[in-house]
Length: 152
Image (cartoon, rainbow, N blue to C red; front, side, top):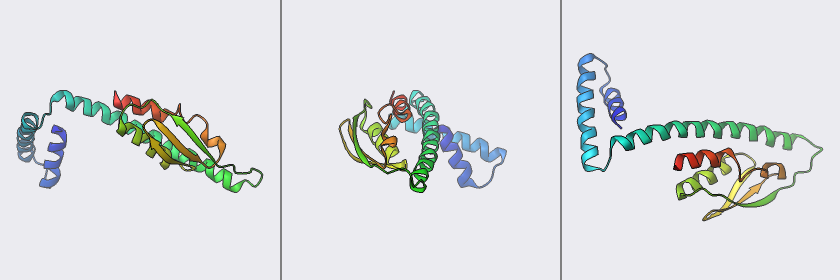
């Protein structure tokens, strides 16, 4: 939060001189102390936020990689005339604990081409897959591992 306050100070100021930098550090520090005192924030939460932001960045990189892979899979299904496309509904359970984590998993499934999360009730997912090959390993995916790490 302290770094974000300082970066916002520099961006809104428009210049970067030693005087502006020192004044920005002081203002950011005072604002951070205010947030810690009156908004139930601490350095421990700040460090946890930084650690989780790195995990979240890795999660986003994994999501982009899986989206690209699924795009090629869907293109292959569309362009190959030999294979018969067999859409199917898959129901599985996940042990993701929080509601936010379950929503992240449902959105990751929906963002991946060829799959759509039809319903999510507690820990039970119903997913429509364009082909049965896309349904394999959905419960044990890397998304679940990263989401569990983000929760913990």
